[in-house]
Image (cartoon, rainbow, N blue to C red; front, side, top):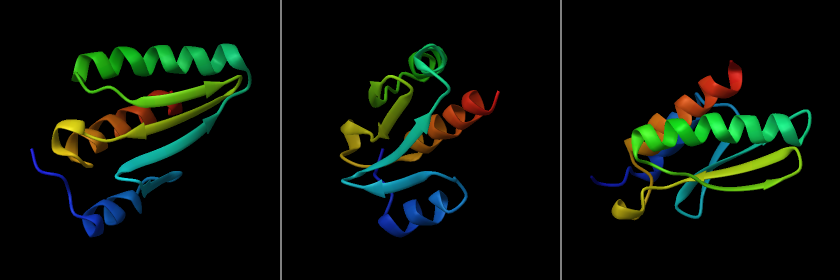
Length: 94
């Protein structure tokens, strides 16, 4: 799998509110009502990530979750990252 070009990544991100591209990955920061809600979202995302066999790099403090997606095998952002990002958006919206 080849990494996507910067222009294509930026174009696709225009349709995804709250996501950005830098340091060879796509990123978002999510804020929840409290730690329990953040952890619940992380759990739902973890199950989806495992199903896709594509795992995020993330960082959680209290009600904030920072997520970075990159395909390490391809050394960049690929369709796999956008597929997981789209599922994360669906999970958060539910």
